[in-house]
Amino acid sequence: MKITLTDTEAIVENRNLFTDLTAYDLVFASSVNGKPERRAVLRADCAPGKTVHIAFPFALPEAGFACMTVTAVQRAVLPGIPAGYEAAFGQVWHNYAAARLTLPRRNWWQWTATSE
Image 1 (cartoon, rainbow, N blue to C red):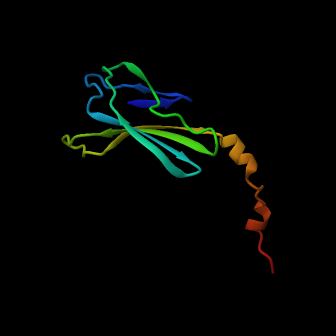
Image 2: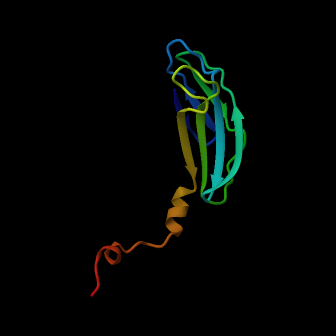
Image 3: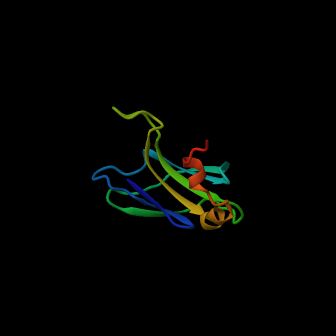
């Protein structure tokens, strides 16, 4: 399984040869400035070898350093796979360039040099 995120949707590719994705929950979680904001759980109906596009259940805020994370989590216990096992994940960041520009520049020389 492969999860790729765009600004508005998750693209889930089922790379299994014979199994669909009904055994997994897709957990959508957003955070702003490192603090969890919203969370939703969806299910994807995707046949083996196919790809499905799933719109985000909620939009990311425009303000702050926002992140959307989508994980595929095993729902039931299977032989050798515990419930809650994370099979795949994808992540997209918003406003990361603006957040980097607001941080002060690091002076690496002061961190590595010793003063006597």
